[in-house]
Amino acid sequence: MVTDAQRRLVDRLHRSPGATAGELAGHLALTAAAVRLHLERLTELGFVASELHRGGERGRPAQRWRLTDVARVLYPDRHGDLAVELLDLVRDELGDAAVEQVVAARTRRQADAYGAELAGLADPVARARRLAELRTAEGYEAEVLDAPDGDGMLLVEHHCPICDAAAACQGLCRGELEAFRAAVGPGATVEREQHLLAGDDRCTYRIRVRRKSA
Image (cartoon, rainbow, N blue to C red; front, side, top):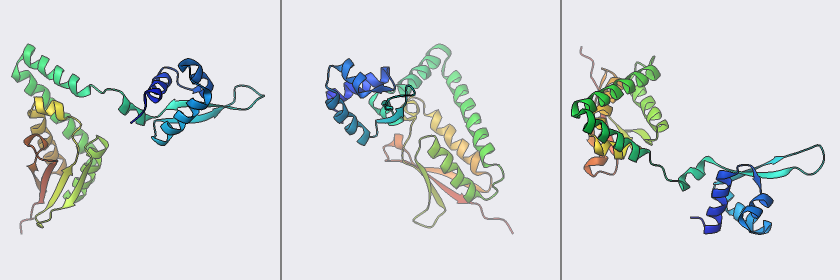
């Protein structure tokens, strides 16, 4: 995705945010022209951005460079490894029952958080759509679709940011299903039909609105 020289430039900006092209050139033993070409390419990729800063009353403002949030993809993210390690430690030190207690506490916290966000929405369809928005904000890339067979709706999650932890502790997935049921409310049922950990391409939940009794 990036050349060795561009990676060195990114690493330098990681250590020296707000550097100018000239300052970067001095640190990396490159010409200022070469640095500017690399910065142009990194800008196209969305990894860097610049701002003009005036150091004093006289002189031209300096163009200073910084990394964007997009550049985080260039650095290892071990959140998944850490979550798995912590689950294993709890299991080894305190036993399976302690893991279940942690999962149950997480489920309660999720359900409470979703419930607070969905307060005031009585319609199960509106609640499901708002739940999908909340899940998308959490990184699950969720959406609610009409079921192709006409039987209710489908809450589809195209990504799972906790997949590693869920693989190490299946209770996390069970807990999320419970939280969904609490979030949608008694006016609908929620059942999982596709599961990433079962080899499917996504997680899918069928939501059926309960018929009101006459």
